[in-house]
Length: 108
Image 1 (spheres, rainbow, N blue to C red):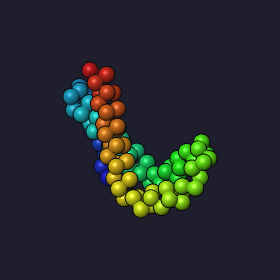
Image 2 (image 1 turned 135 degrees about the horizontal axis):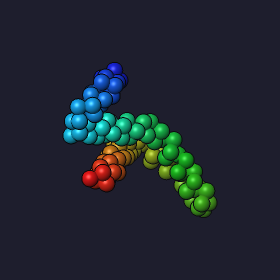
Image 3 (image 1 turned 180 degrees about the horizontal axis):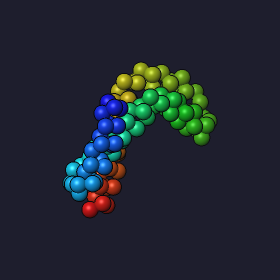
Image 4 (image 1 turned 90 degrees about the horizontal axis):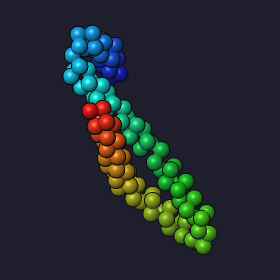
């Protein structure tokens, strides 16, 4: 995949720019940006459990009377890990698409 992307970046992008095929040039750039967004989304999924634990610690630090619930909440996060990861993946892709669409709309 990386060699394919390198071939597109180093061969087709300058070629389309040189021959003034701006529609293909913008299509290739948009494709690269979408792949970058998906890459960041899947990279963020690897650190999701750590972020959940930090958020739990932070919220329990703000509300010390709920410290008794820490064990229950931790078990709940562990039990629902696949479901939480699917939901966060869906949310991240949707948010990335909205950011990409707004950036593309600003180019017009």
